[in-house]
Image (tube, rainbow, N blue to C red; front, side, top):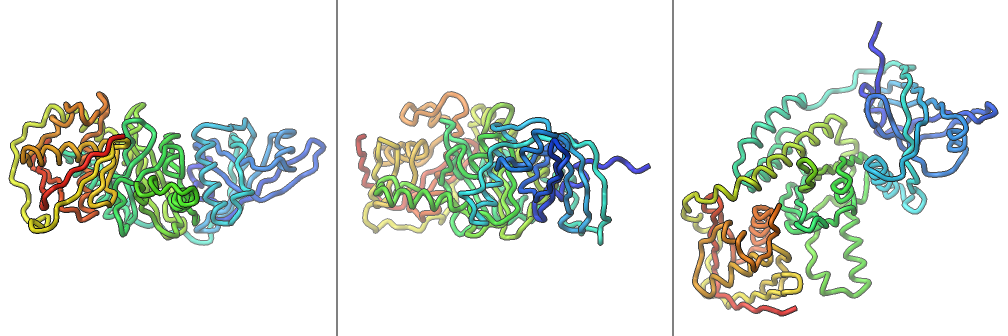
Length: 453
């Protein structure tokens, strides 16, 4: 006797690429059939349907909790009938937020943003699944086995000894092992309110330093709710950053606008997957991948990336705790020739605004916050004493910077600052010379100006 079918075996049918059908029955026995807007996998025995309108289907469910669903496999055409029982409606929490974000993505694609609004997530228990139409052909299996990929990825990640190599190795692996060409890594700030980009791959600009408020957009919601959000149809997630700029222009907030770094992203993404990076109860950041292809990220991709993100969380937290006790590696000479010599150029005007610790180089915005405070300290020390060699430890102990006592993410701040200086082709660079040590390279005279708040 064949094994009983579960949702795990037909997860691809719940993608929404081909609309399903739901059949309900009123208290007097009158049937009703309607197309499904959204079906969400919860586990092998439970699914959720979106509650958007108080219509005939909704009234029937409340009167008679038994429903039947017809879903279709998007690759092989197999059709399955699902018998399910309504259990409850959730109006907050990870499931609701995940479905809400997906629905918003679908609505943005169809031009129905003002109509598609999730009122709740209706949770059902699956009683039986029956195949009513056999596959027309075997669905193609693409790419390497995910367990083999995970084994190689975890081995390479485990060998990373510092924050920067962990970032680069992660992005390298996503491209080489999973064929993901567009990705970004974001870290949560010390206040726990915003995520800032520390590394990206596949975009014209790295976007280092760009920010996403926690709870906003696909990335912010995935991080806040600690749940992966996968959208496999064309969305306008990148419209989030454009909308911010438009609102700022409309309000005339030029001072705020000039301090914005554009979030990297595809102009027309067709598939997106955002995942939280956490360790235990601590949220550390987010991993975001996207593609111009519809249905680019499968359930297997999501499972693999969830595992990689969880491994990243543990490694990031371990690096935070380990680095303070291992910052005594001897310094080595910095790489030569990384910054063109500009000794005869005019002095570099550096303005530092105390209000938000923002730095401007020759009137161009560079960075703000803790990273801005770090650079200001380094440049002042260099101008006053001619110093070029620094250590992470002294930055941690410096009251000028104001790092939190726990979870300061100093390595992330330094990596972000180094990337921003490279992005802006600045004549100031930070170059790693050893574990917990770095070299400040300055190729022009400095004209420092602090602006009090």
